[in-house]
Length: 397
Image 1 (cartoon, rainbow, N blue to C red):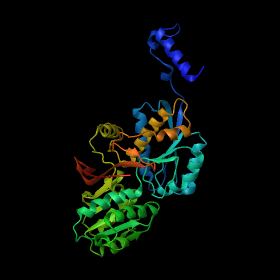
Image 2 (cartoon, rainbow, N blue to C red):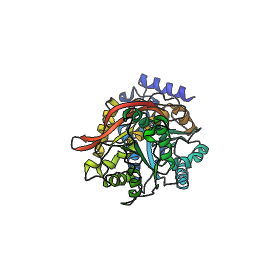
Image 3 (cartoon, one colour):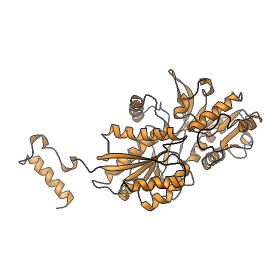
Image 4 (cartoon, helix red, strand yellow):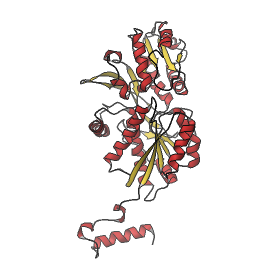
């Protein structure tokens, strides 16, 4: 008997109240029975300066499971997290460890370096990876890698488009960034939207060391002094996590009180709670694809549940990971009762529009989101600092 016919027969027996089926089960079908358990593998940094971001990524995915009876696509789901490390070799070892445990799909990956390093391993394994943090623009022509956050150059594009119109014609920006592939992606997007020949951004970029681990108290002091010697009207920078905290503190210690602009990671997560002098961070403007005060039904549910569980507002890291669980939930359900990695991957391409806390978005041909970008500013939201939404900027992707 085929699976379809078997299911239909069971449905008819239930409807007829056949002996052996109690009255309470009369409406039950085979599809209501528990489906087989599955494993999802998560790669996150569990050591080093990106650990806090890894925690946010894990929190977002787990919250979706909490709100959906610990299931994806009707299957009881075990989330298996491993340390992605900081380079290609550690990332590849992490992927192999998860594949050996029989995971149906992969998610997470915070480091752009790790994402590039595991590309071939994932593609050869033919197991879908739904990455949930910003990824490099050079990651192209992939079949099994999807991303729910954004491509790094888009962060620069959103800000470049905004500042091109917002800055006075006589203003001059200092650009300060760690010398890394991620920074160069952001800078390229920014310059292309702002206009590379525009005199307002004509000063040479000040490149800092790309520090692995927590930067020292004077790590950026010399480079900051070099940039400020040109007496800029504003600073455009790109840092995240512990590096963001140290950069902002050292910038303010050099008596710079002007505006700071950056992709949203500069003020995301624990960065906001890391300043004794809150005036150091108040007023910083950033662009990102999420703000906790976006007013839609999906975000009200998500943000409320996140605050209840963790006692703080959700971040873009958590949101993208929550959405990774969301799209896997839909894809696994579409893939049927006994999904394979290849079937889940095919189903990911058929999902369409995602009703997300950040607003409605969908995968584009590059398997990255086409989505809205927002301008945010660090302000007090009651007694706490928050990235408050100012306006919608553009749809990119």
